[in-house]
Length: 360
Ligand SMILES: [Zn+2]
Image 1 (cartoon, rainbow, N blue to C red):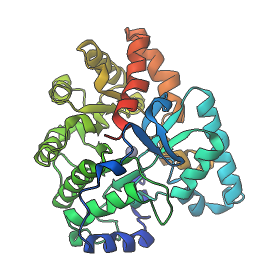
Image 2 (cartoon, rainbow, N blue to C red; image 1 turned 135 degrees about the horizontal axis):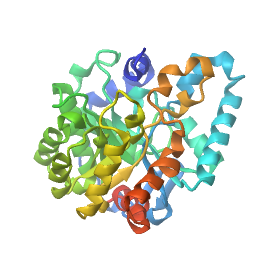
Image 3 (cartoon, rainbow, N blue to C red; image 1 turned 180 degrees about the vertical axis):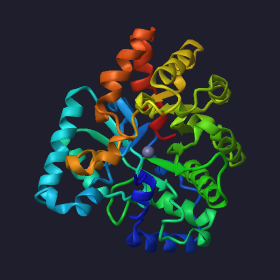
Image 4 (cartoon, protein in one colour; image 1 turned 180 degrees about the horizontal axis):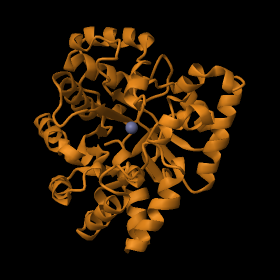
């Protein structure tokens, strides 16, 4: 089957390549006057809001690449307006089930359409936080990575946080970096250092796509610490792909957060760790006193989930049957059966996002 990476890799945007190339040629603004920051606020696609308004938050999802799927199979949708309408309808169901905010971790090189994200947020009344950053999809990307510098990428990230994305005034509220292997490749290290510098300059936090099964968070942390980033501003995502509690404890004791957003994948018979083990690890972390270092989400590809039946085989292997509601409908009830208390669920799903996504 075509993997998601191969699939999305084909769409690395030529149009945005130019803007990134331009950014790499100018010296980064690495110091933003603190007075210009909106401390304690969270930047959503509809503007800054007080962090206390975030509510129940899914911290790692993919909504903004939806139009890619519309463009690839346009005949099946009946038109762009119908695609948007169907997306909004689906998101309203998610909102009505108690989700208040979705963090979209789709940077430009995974097909982010910021105008679509703004439109469905406005029409569904779901808060959305957009990201800047870089997923890195080598060798599929059309953008010449070796030409990039730490300063150039940091400048690009800062621009998307401070000024806006793709010529709009819609600003990013988080930086996402993808590290594919157990150690960052040279160009990924450039991205990680650029993310660190942009985070320090703007006060927005960092989410790192990690290969947790190979303890990737540890090598990523060394680089981030070398750049002087506070671990409190960093989440290692897809951490539940590891079932190693020692790995988890090592990172949370240093102050890092862990996003458990692939838990549903453990339901597949050939995927390890199992769903049960992933949930058990969350319970063990809560019992060890680290509920304040956990996030829950699903890493779903929302646009692909709307594909016609005959086209969505490959995506169904990655997304949970309940889509954006797997955490609400399946994971949280399971955690409660394991003994995780309501207050701890609230800490994980409401308090942690409020603290983490607040600008400092
Ligand atoms: Zn993701």
